[in-house]
Every structure is written in C-alpha cells, then in structure tokens.
Length: 194
Image (tube, rainbow, N blue to C red; front, top):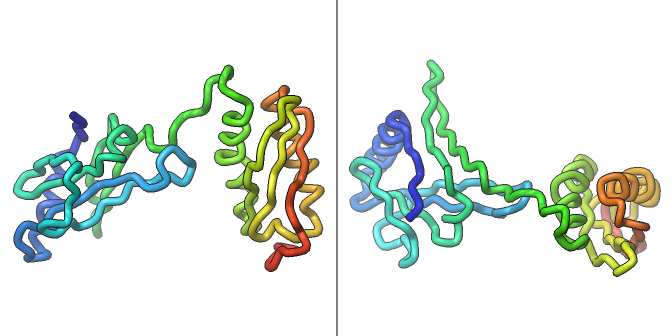
C-alpha cells in the first residue's frame, strides 16, 4: 500500500481548502499525468462525493479523504506533499521523485535509449522553436529515423538541426547510432519557425 508523506502544514492547508468549498463528502484526488516522461506532473483536484474510482487508494488526511489514482501509484513512491507559507501567501508543493522515470540501462535496446534522449534532451530544446521530433524507428545497423513536427516541419533549417544538433547529440551519447535520417514530409508543414 502506497504511503505519501503529508506534512502538518499541508494537512492543515488541504483540510481548510476543502472546508471552504462547503460541499459534503468533498475530497481530493491525486494522479500523475504523462508519467515516465519529462512532461510528467502531479495533479491534485477536488473529488466530489461519488467521483472517485473503484480502484483508487483511499488515504485519510485529517477530516478529508485523498483518493490516489491506481495507475499513478507506482510513480508516487516516496512522494511528499508540503505547504510552504511565504508571508503574503503560500504554495503547495508535491515532490514525487519517480514521476519522470529514469534513464534506460546501458544494455537496454537502442530504440529505448534513443527515445529517452529524444524525450529528455532533444525535444525540450526544440520546444523553444515550437517544434519536436518523433522517433519513427531504429534499424539493426543503428540508423535512426525521425519525423519533425510543429515549427520544425517545413523549416528551412531542419537539416542543420538534424545534422549539427540531433545527430551529433545521439552519436556522442550512443556510439551505436551510425546515422540519423529525416523521414518528414516537409512540404506539408504549416507553421515553420523560420
């Protein structure tokens, strides 16, 4: 059974927050969105009477109930909910160290290792240009096939990004990568960055 540490300040804040809603049986529901990815996040929402799921784990917090989504429980191991009072207000802080997952082992399939680097290093960088890449596949001889999207699809600089950024990064970190090819139909791009 999952145990989430809830500080006394968080306990008090959450109980007061729910009490202000003046709704009998109102609780809270905690779940992880985009689990195992760099975009992972904890979502804490009100949960009305009868809105919890049958497989949610029930965790009492003072006078209210916290329902923890079953599919999120493995990602919330060692999680902590804290409330930090900052003079003019405060903020609720949910620390869940495992929600973004972890890098694959060095002996993991190349496809998995490439996917991890795309999610954690390459796409966050391309996001500043409103772009991203999707991993299409990896051949047995280490050729990585990618598809550009967003602002990168149709961009005149996509080839430079591919060769000087993406391919360089992948080859430096994964010597098994022999080449990176672009499998994008750039002619259909609608909103390139450049």
